[in-house]
Length: 416
Image (tube, rainbow, N blue to C red):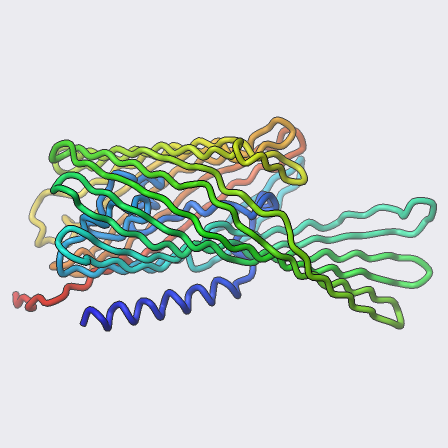
């Protein structure tokens, strides 16, 4: 039975990575133009309804991808898997104009299981960054003539994160973990230039930039007392190497010529990151979680065509309520969640940071009484950017669904 579960989910991971590799726009934000796109902040299980906080939370009832040490707490005979989907609508405002978009996509797939009484393993596939933007209406006259030149630029794709986690419980209260991420993906940019002269002509430039690399990390969790736990994580710096394949098509009223290019591109550097988290329980019904993370982008000495990468700080807080009354009743087993998260952004344009903040609500609906299986719904309302300095402010609504399931090995069914 164990081999069957693992084989099935391994196949799903491979299929999902193929689907992600062939996906078009995974984002619809103009800020995905910078770097390798917007960093994904969608988590697994109940994390999305708790302000994206969970560094100190054990993986005792669901897959917590925030800290590899959490997998040292997977119960024996349990097999967790998690499937996630998201839908996002956003409105971008620039000056006196606005534009709305909607996008739906896969958000994650993961499996986790115990290796023995003290250790556990997990594999997850989650988009690491996402790209999806359109810039149109760029018009100008060719210097020295009255001929009009018009351009439109589109970008899509992103980087995927196939993460392997191992957690080990040194004692009943102290857990350590290590993680390895295989990062890979493709970003496609298409630029179309139209020249309106005595005869019509166009120049179509398509460029596929592929990146790949490996990143390592580690974490710990310590249960100080029964109702208080702390945790910490660190992700080491990494370098993503890349290559670019380009196609240029020059078309006129009567001819079309195609040119192909293949070249290397600058490596993209990921910074050192660390984070700390705290979780506490009040009156057995309320669980409060707090996270802080910092990314040292300054040390990468990188800049984009328009902006510069700067150190980033993230704050997340969440609270969950679950009734302590008769657990045989369905409504007493519901989990209600609320949270808030804020980060000051990792890119600066004209001395202005592109920050992001969001309010979160969530609910967990149990599926089966003798397991931890649950459907987790979450909703976030947030905004990023600003309309000052000629920039864009983006308001968004994000809905996510995580099907967090638990399979039990080698246990007899209970008859009620």
